[in-house]
Image 1 (spheres, rainbow, N blue to C red):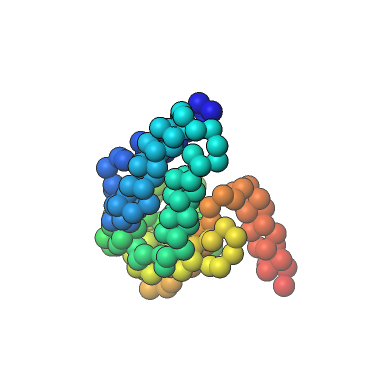
Image 2 (cartoon, rainbow, N blue to C red; image 1 turned 45 degrees about the vertical axis):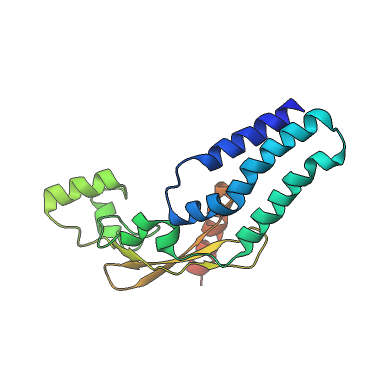
Length: 188
């Protein structure tokens, strides 16, 4: 049973660290505090009682974490204050290299931060690039198994660009799917 105790101790240590966002702080005060106490209780109980009762505190933590994750997703300033403060950046809008940024790509510049800096140094501007102006505060969680998040970014051209953030996915598969959809759309 030692591997389970070691893993629970690791979880408790990771939750006990300094929170970097308000959302992490809320987790630490709620389910995180319960997790730390439950791990201590589990260790003490399991050493003397090998029945299913030792797992009761861990089950209670699981229910708390599930309830915390079902709550409405917070706004961007609560999840990532640094991203919320982002304004008029020099970051190229993700995924626009082939269409909006074609003239720079023809000049031999790939879409990377280093090459953007080189181009800006040589030419003094980034006119042909759509740059990230800001990220909208609201984040929508889509109701599916992996609960992907929909995020809207605003470009310096005034347009809105919607992105789908998905966790626990094979990015190679997603890239292949995107390539297939791109081919299907361009074949029209």
